[in-house]
Image (cartoon, rainbow, N blue to C red):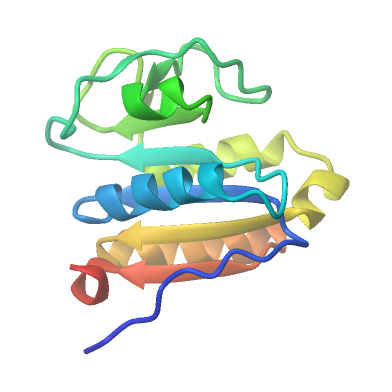
Length: 155
């Protein structure tokens, strides 16, 4: 099976990138690619979920994300260095992480946004099929477009 790459749309500069499992690197790479583009002032937020230790050493974020649940401060160091906000979710009780599924974290954060911000948003999800399906359901619930790649396609 062959997949297509993600295609960010300039009319949706608020990119919500959701990743888990082997989808984590793809989502991080997309965030980095958006940083390097100059066609639009991209505003990505990266949310990653894992039940095993992350493939990097999380650190407390220095980037404020309005609407993020209290205490959710664990972030991806390489993205922090680029000024890209990120947050982590897990059921494994890792410090600073959201206690739950990454898609639940996405829904909690999206709930805090007004319609104008949601209208500028597009979600990109990559990871296990169950997570990708849950991400698509969250996007549908909030009326935002979603590009999804189950890890079976992206791996």
